Length: 327
Image 1 (tube, rainbow, N blue to C red):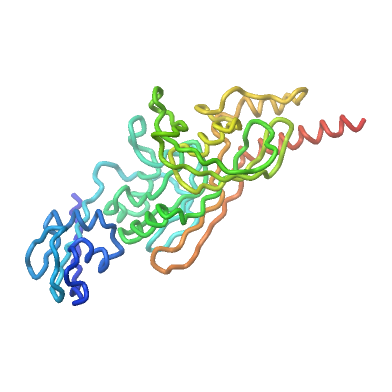
Image 2 (cartoon, rainbow, N blue to C red; image 1 turned 60 degrees about the vertical axis):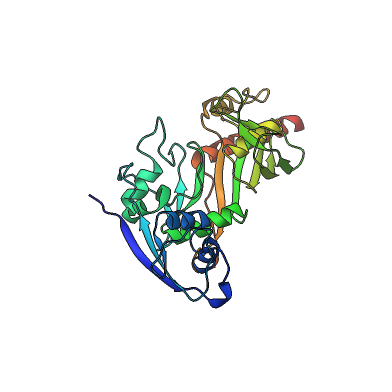
């Protein structure tokens, strides 16, 4: 049976902090942890000031000794499973994973096992002592590409702060239905669909802020190859925003709309479009600031084979029509 892990942090409160609230002091002294986590430890009695337990709002005098017992409960709800991971980068603080389409990131109803989280617990057992096994952000099951995982509490706090400050670089590539004239931005709040609760939707009043930037990479006869950059990270954000501006993602089973087949196209392209059963969306480029070294780091993953085959067929279709028009 796995036991809880604990370690002790000690620090003297500087005299210039006299009169400040305890939770504010701890946020200054132990900035590697989130304020909510520090407040939780105070309330649980894991923070002692000169041997005494105080409340988060209590004021300090300056000069006291702070002792924080950092406790982490092991993640026992989920099983470690030997599932292969495509690890792009790894050190003592972070893991960068290239997730294939079809792999669920986190267990949920309908997917209690066989997920990336189960694989992470097997690859790095210490992740049992980091909330959500260090998962900071997610990709939908049928979206492929890059995501970062924190291996320590400190790294997780730093990465979450970057994410909340919109400092992550997250660029995707996608194929959408319709021919875009130009790139642009979508600034449209997203929230749960009022009727279909498994869907998300643009909700101008009740939704959370959501901003997506996009630019055209290549145009075809009835489709467009697009680069997308996320400024925020709402559930299904790119899929919802592209559908909202009437350029739904090819293969999207929820927001994709009607299949569009170019006139007089080849049988091969028809089968390619009909057979593409996942959203044509790939997290191509990820950039972060390393949580401990402060170094700017980024990674790029090439277009996956299924999307590449789709693009090749769309290019061939366009070329064939251009040749036909020249006759």
